[in-house]
Amino acid sequence: MDTPIVTSLFRQLFRHPPCPWRSAAPLSIPLNGARIAVQQQRRTIIAERDDTKRAASDGEWHPKSPFLHIDMTEEFKRYPMVTAAQLASRKERPRRVKMLVRDYIDGCCSDLLIFPHLSGLVLLVDALYNPHYGYFSKHAVIFATKEPFDFTAMKDEMEFHKRLADEYTRFEDELDAKEPNPLRQLWHTPTELFKPYYGEAIARYLVTNYKLSLYPYNDLIIYEMGAGNGTMMSNILNYIREADPDVYNRTKYKVIEISGHLAGLQRKQADSKGHADKIEIVNKSVFDWDTYVPDPCFFLALEVFDNFAHDMIRYDPETEMPYQGIVLCDQYGDFHDFYIPQLDPVAERFLRVRNHVVRSPYEHPLNTPRFIRKLRKMLPAASNLTKPEYIPTKAMMFFDVLRERFPAHRLVMSDFHQLPDSVEGVNAPVVQTRYERETIAVTTPFVQQGYFDILFPTDFEVMDDMYKALTGKLTRVMKHEDFMSKWAYLEETETRCGENPLLGWYKNVSMLSSV
View 1 (cartoon, rainbow, N blue to C red):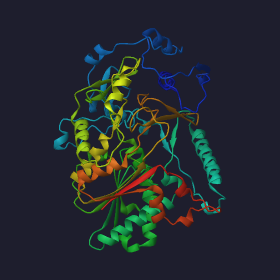
View 2 (view 1 turned 180 degrees about the vertical axis):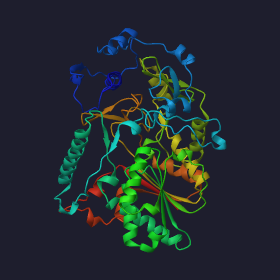
View 3 (view 1 turned 90 degrees about the vertical axis):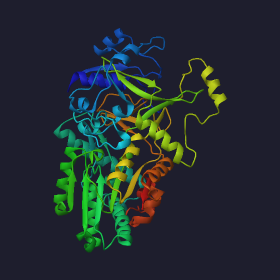
View 4 (view 1 turned 180 degrees about the horizontal axis):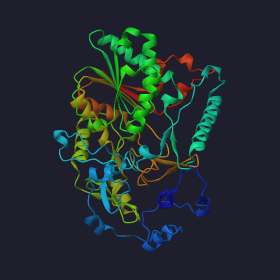
């Protein structure tokens, strides 16, 4: 294992406290045969002294002091804003640079599809998708069972919990037998937990709406973005082939997949299920899509909005002026956040569009009366800016792609409308990692790239209004439970006592569909 990388990981991880439910007792972490005691501490707005950094790099750990600050103003002036080509080609994490928060969090490939209103914009592959050290590129593994769960044979949801835990252990034991990895980032999706029933519910929705308005004049064309192991794709095609052979003969399934590794798994999945002639896999980011698709099609974006990059905005409590977050990475690899009043075109456009088209009230740092904000500002150690707001600029850009390149699309998206244990702020993400099979949440999005998953909740009311305004489509938003109640065969996932995990799980997920 690369010692400098691991050392840097734990410097980033344990500089911040874990989840609120964890004990405040010191943690004892094994590293290269030794055990390092790390005292958990409360979050403070401070920075380490240089001698503290050198000590930490030599294996010593010191708590931060609120009385010690580092002025990084000169470094902020000198460090360059990094470019997409620079980060995409780097094999090491960048230092002595600065970037937009959305560029740090996620980004897309360097060959960005530019629209007129996005002229000059450059996005980056970094924390999640950098090909050399990004989370999904290096450490993320999708959990999968060998066989579907037999829910009808289970007593209740508690038995499902137990069997799922056993399957998780078996899955990781097999991986560790090949290559042990205490930092493996393992995650699951409803597609894998409830296969094939979840995919079949989506398939029924697609086939029904296709036959209502498009059949027999058009083919059933399905695009799926980020298809993971290819399970959803195979479940949908299996169902259509068995339930409606005539529609299957007219079905075309196209996957847009940024990961070359996952694209290979998806191809093998299609071949093994006999769908090779139905599948086209395009190994690129959807934001690099440069082909105009005039045909009516369904576009699946399931569990992808949570990893779309966001910008960080903070506001002056008195003037209400927005300030955009910039991340500075210093010579030690530590991160510092700065805020500037000059918004880049994408963030400025998002705020302007949201202000004009969103109808219902939504959570915002400036929702409290101004006199209360003034009183808070007078408190000792009060910040001169509001708490952060994370705005989904990347989701807005995705809507632009749909409008410009897929004008006849029908979107089906699902994602979390609420997440627990998020970092501070409005629409703030959950930032978490796994160490020795234990999930650990942290309190900042500025963490070691490649080892942490960053998941954002989706405000479906805001996204619904913005999607309709940017694409001109009519939409419907439903809770996951309501969608599955309508389209799934619930008797297939019901336990003997009448509980249904397909409905009981993912209550914090909503679905948006368009016509």
